[in-house]
Length: 346
Image 1 (tube, rainbow, N blue to C red):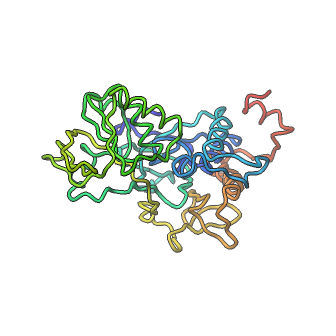
Image 2: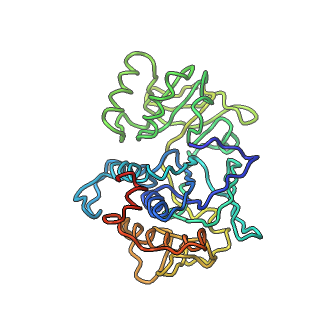
Image 3: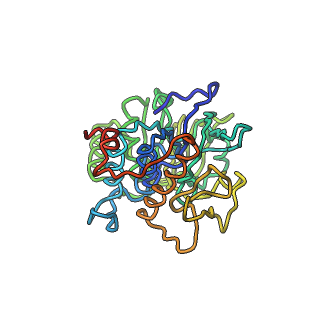
């Protein structure tokens, strides 16, 4: 992950908004035509829906892979794009996009990171992922200060009384990772059954048995504190109501998908999707492309393999913008020594 410096814009050929499977494959196709890129994703890791919503769910319609889980597909794509060395910027959302006088684009994230890119590729699936907010009165006042929906830096939780709420992979993973550095760690879930990976559940229960993690089966009902800093969370369980000391809260209640700031970028929209042509997969704004589930065109199928096809055609057109003085010769990876050299197999 890159060192984020809001003072110095990051200049690059292409910025890909979204690091799901289609965004990852776009790295490969762009790399084949000598286009380097940065990827921005609101999640804390690559994979999009595959990694966040169904990492262990089997997928049956990926060519040459009769069965592959969401996480396995992401892992294979990450291996495939290694030769091109893309830079990832996780836990960030692109809040603004503006066209510059020289034809390039300026993108600024909610973390203050600024990018200057010659082309922009929107591969944001159904839009940006928005964490579901717990139904706790007044929680908005603590968000971004002591209530966090993702972990950008583990160090910010060092020495704190951490309360993690949820029963999926994210809740379990951060319970295991933050326990060694937190002053105390409590895991709260509404029932004593967990949706996460079995080995993570086993490790968590081992920490509970050793007294390293406190597990409470119940629900949070209220938060208290001052000036954005939590002090306690009220929890209701079968044994009654109690106040949990808490200086940092991580609720993992799942995600909802919204088009989000993309709707403010001046693109033509149709029912919260971005229309494109099927020759270039370019939007109504030249140099801005949309691939994957976020785009629409006659006959569109919302399949990962469709997004892969769209990424391949997009890259051919992006090359014209980024390398206008170079003639692009179509080559096959099976026979081109030049492409094989880029891939490190020759």
